[in-house]
Length: 164
Image (cartoon, rainbow, N blue to C red; front, side, top):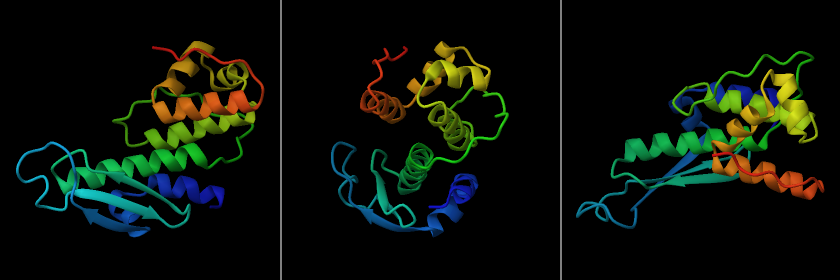
């Protein structure tokens, strides 16, 4: 995926992003009442530009599962696609999952961390954050933290404690 397209994908509405995917619906498993195994409420999205898929079947509503799967897809795009960092990156705002700009802001934060060669202190300074605040932002999403920790380990850097 070319990098400017990453931001375009992250800014798309749910319907626009769904149009870039193959949607598959299936019967969810597990608890959820007598209707759980009678209707196809589980959602699988196959995103062709990255050749990846995400699934969600936590809810009994296909609509809510589709929305949750699209958020998972946006977070996957944010975690895996890097873009060059501008000379003066904008200061980081407090990230929150309910913010519609969350995946895009997270992607930009991860761009700065990658540009700083995983040095959380240098990345925090570039973003106008304390290094503890940056670690807290990275620790909000389990997959983001695991990716960050694995990349630091692969680079021979010391492990960091995940903030609470």
